[in-house]
Image 1 (cartoon, chains in turn orange, green):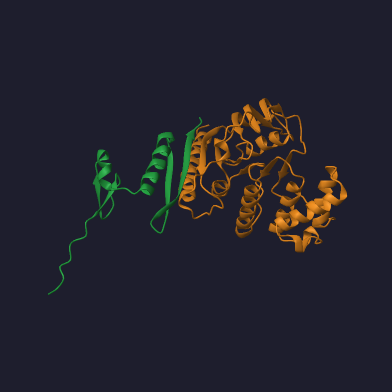
Image 2 (image 1 turned 90 degrees about the vertical axis):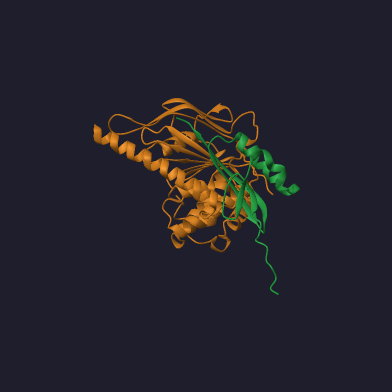
Amino acid sequence: MADVVTASELRQPVPKLELRNLTVARRTTGEPIVAATDVSFEVRRGEFVCLLGPSGCGKTSILNVLAGLDPATAGQALLDGQPIAGPGPDRAVLFQEPALFPWLSVRANIELALELEGVASPERAERTNRWLAKVHLDRWAEAMPHELSAGMRQRAALARALAADPDVLLGDEPFGALDAQARELLQDEVQRVWVESEGRKTFVFVTHNVREAVVLADRVLVMSAAPGRLLEEFRIHTERPRDLDDVLVTRVVSEIHGLLMREVDASVAREMAR
Amino acid sequence: MAERIEPRRPRRSIGAMSEGTERVPADDLESLDLTDEERAVLAKVGAILRRLSFGTVVLVVQDGKVVQIEMAEKFRLR
């Protein structure tokens, strides 16, 4: 009988990522809009955490702060106990759109990322080949992005992000633009890659897909409607790979779905009362 | 002569009632004649229940044996 111990239960002196009373505002042409407020949580090294919440609750804004793409409006964001001052090679971001260079082949896209990291040529080729094989794109290495399906392009983006060997992978709705089948395949791919990292890689994904969050994450942090606050945390202790039909997954999905629907209803009622 | 078939004695369960089971008082667990394996499962479930305030526990059974205990914990943060 297997015991399931997640990274969240392992004692680590300093969390990999930490938010302390973070408030983040979105820039607009008018007054800045507070996207998320007073958000505090830790992410341990080797954890897989999903941030889940209704549209506009500040999930992406929080992820941008963790990536160093946007500053915190108030509060602190820390990486290995140090304030995050900007982007760095220790963090890779996977966006909804794969953002591959269209004039470069899949192989060249991955190699370019490694070249920019200062990886020497022979190692670049070796790492590129290894990651192409890991995401099952070795046969498509010389293809141009427009020749690939949306799912394959996102797999190439995943390979490019992880080939540079970052400590942290941040995903901003990375499967949001994919069809249901491609999405499930990518979820399996990401689960496998994370398991194979054996606790060395920390993944933080933002999604509004409840099933995706529960299948992927050790911990699911559920946020309120805008301005986003943390509502509840779900810690899921079960082995991987997980399946959408697993009893525990179904049960937690149903609970989170109910929580989100109540939150959205309350938010609509507040708007109507204005 | 037709063989007389004894009615099957219902299996006894801990706490939860289901068809074909009878409830056993909590202080009468010894009467269940638990195997070492069953005791180990109960000990693990007990350990989980002691730390769990809100959540779900799922026992995965294959071929009559508990092969995995899964758990989801819920924490209210607001």
